[in-house]
Structure formats: structure tokens, C-alpha cells
Image (cartoon, rainbow, N blue to C red; front, side):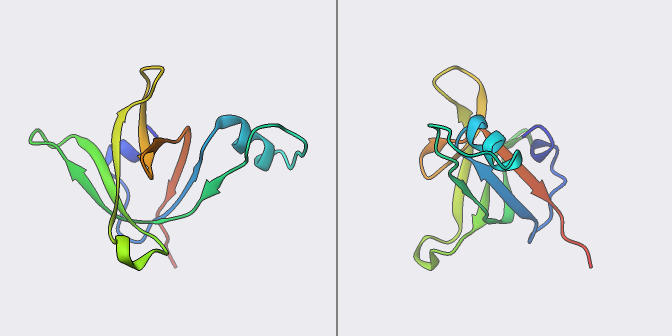
Length: 102
């Protein structure tokens, strides 16, 4: 998440998110049998949302739901007080973003 906040992503960058760290660990370790959902999603980065002071307060993505474009992912504090980007109204623990170059 810290890298996403550096404003390095370009329109069209590939994003991957996971609901919980345990779900990410299960998928990345090719594990099975955890009680935690390995829910993940892969939207496409559209643009940053910036505060008046030009710091990242969220971003917009392009997703498979055309009626909800662009979808906003605000930066906020979760229940534990840690800064996290939200997806569909809920904080997500793991985010990756990569610019695509051919």
C-alpha cells in the first residue's frame, strides 16, 4: 500500500487486492484448508484522488461492472486504526499495483 501512495501508478496499471493477509498467504503459498476466505480481485487503475495538499486520499479503478465506473477506493482507517484502501465499502488488507509496459 505504501508504494501505491507514492503516486507512481499510471492509468491502466494492474491492481490486485486481497481481503485478508491470511487469504493472500494461502494463495501465494499455494495452500489449502484455511478458514479464511482467499477473496481477491483484480481491477485496473484509473486515477488518483488527491487532497488539497496533493497527498493521496484514494484512487479510482475500472472494473467489470460498467454501471459503477469509475469505482472509488478511498484511503481511510480500518477498525484497528491502520490506514487501508477500501474496496466496495470495506477495508482490504493487501494491495499490489504494477504498471504495464510492452
